[in-house]
Amino acid sequence: SRPAHTTVRSYPPSSAAAAAARAAAAAALDGGYDLTVVCAGREARFSLDDAYTAGGVADALVEYLAERAAPTTTDAVPAARALYRAWPDPIDVFRQTAGGRNVLAVGLEEDLYYCAARDRSELVPRVGDRLTLLG
Image (cartoon, rainbow, N blue to C red; front, top):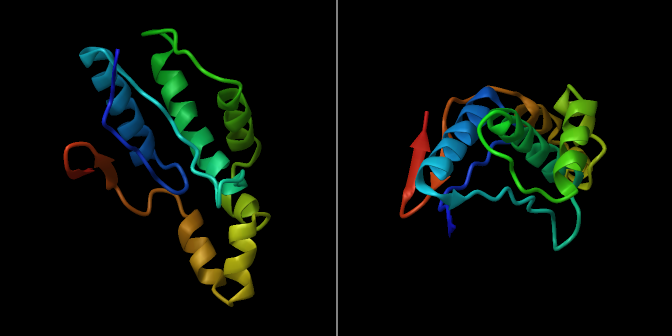
């Protein structure tokens, strides 16, 4: 099948990101596209905050696809979902990450709370032929 040209990114996963993930899955199913969740990491290494966020997006996708299609996944999907489900409060995760510690080290603790807030915005970027804001 053809690759989908959709990127859903929200930090941390929010209901808007979950809705966008479900919309991307529906479009992929309807159009015969593949849908890939990529955990970005940091400097070509594992990043807990990115894995946590990818877990939230993957969680929404797996739940949406449960009765619609059998997704092909790697072991990263259940691992990321387990991380996401293990920490209901993103601030607890972000305080333990290198990125979170860097933010705290420069005195920007409020920024960490801002980034950890769910549903701060209803807009989620969708990248395809051009940038579109879903909301």
